[in-house]
Image (cartoon, rainbow, N blue to C red; front, side, top):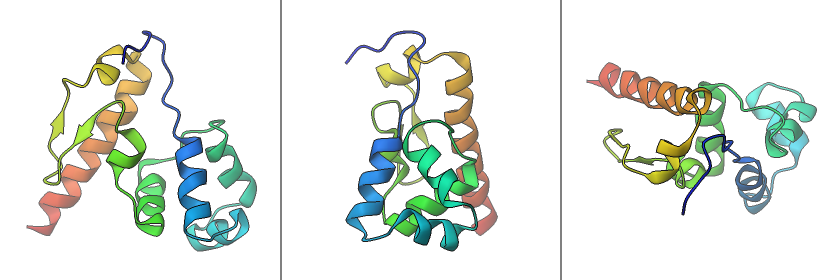
Length: 115
């Protein structure tokens, strides 16, 4: 799969599918994670990308992994090391690469703090 240089990271449909699969409404998710239902809707329509901690909390709530969300862009191994040879990541613009890099750094920090 070849992505253009300005390809955006779009995980909204995956978040929505995971929410519905787990039987949550946007309002329920908003209450659980401490934001507005409008914000949950914006995440699901790709109008906002969400913070690192928010995305991780959604993954935990929905019982999904970062690979489930970002799998077409990057492969995050179970030890939180990354496989940057994924063609989708390489094709992203610097802003979106930074989002993924920040997620990985945050996960690495969490992993190191557990040791």
